[in-house]
Each structure stands twice: as structure tokens, then as C-alpha cells.
Amino acid sequence: MLKFICYPKCTTCQKAQKWLIDNNIAYELRDIKLNNPTNEELSDWYNKSGLTIKKFFNTSGLLYKALDLKNKLPEMSEEEMLRLLATDGMLVKRPLLIGEDFVLVGFKESEWQEKL
Image (cartoon, rainbow, N blue to C red; front, side):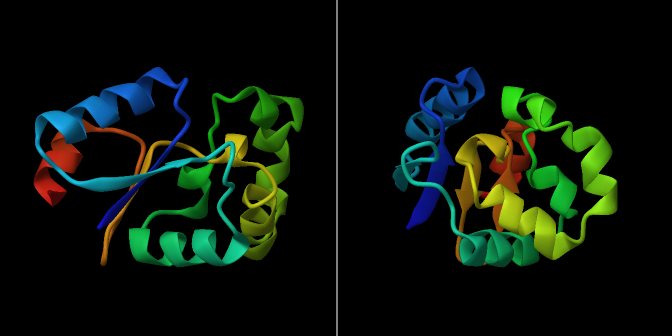
């Protein structure tokens, strides 16, 4: 079963969830704020995604800005970035859709349609 990891108050997450429901796609919901991804999960998803680690950061989030990550990330190793992401779900770009052999980060309807 797909894992849909989101922040329920996020409008993009709400749109993605509506899309899943409208397309009759079964998923398991997980609130990223209540159940933060672990370092191991993030590492696994990152490796499955084929994306750069920076794509996993919620660059428009308040915490990202408060921590001045725009300037700090270039100095960090991938391992340090994964550990940082695991400290707070609000740092992680969402929604995340986790499948057996893929990971989608953010909601681009065309990308989701293609994968599912």
C-alpha cells in the first residue's frame, strides 16, 4: 500500500489527497508533524527517489528560513542533511508519496498520474 505523508493543514497536501481519493487510489495517511520521518526512512526514500537531497527540504517553510538553511546546506554533507531533516517534519517538503519502488516529493499532478 502507498504511504501518503503530509501535513493536513497544507493546501498542496489537501489537493494531493483529493487527487488520490478522486482516482480511487488506496493509501495509508501519515501526519508528518505528529510522526516525523526517521533518518533511516529519509535515507531510504532519498535513495529510491533519484532526486538530490535538497529536493527533500521544504524551502518555503518558516523553519527552513529561521535556520538560514539556504546558506548552510551547501556546507553540509548528505548525511548531515538527512539527520537534520529527521529532526523536524516541518523541514521536509511534502506531500511525499512512497511506493514499493518509487518516491514522489511534492505534488505535480502530471508526475503522479504518470507513476500511478
